[in-house]
Length: 137
Image 1 (cartoon, rainbow, N blue to C red):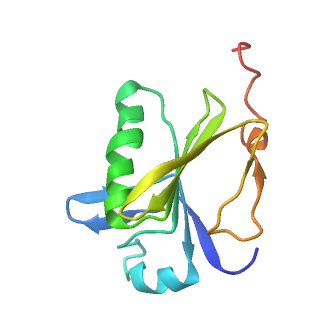
Image 2: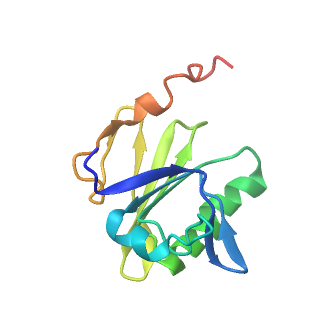
């Protein structure tokens, strides 16, 4: 809404031939997009913010929590959110020097904000509003 950047759903991000990922959502600032968006329509550099929604399965969860966290930290992502729909929470990792560190775990009663998204706020509970209540299958 501020015009400071753009949000993309499931974009291809090509860091190099061996490291390509398809995060669920990214936000990238206007300043950064000019340097990382290639003619092929894919990002060839780090977005400012990456959001991954955990997929079912131990292997998928490990990939998002370990491999992708490490990759995004190495490649310069400023903020990484892991949305855990089963636990109804969002883990927020923010850049601290050369890595991404856990800033906090936000639950349904909390509100997400980001220093990279001025004016943005989102009640975490609203992310899970369409899901059945816990314990009700």
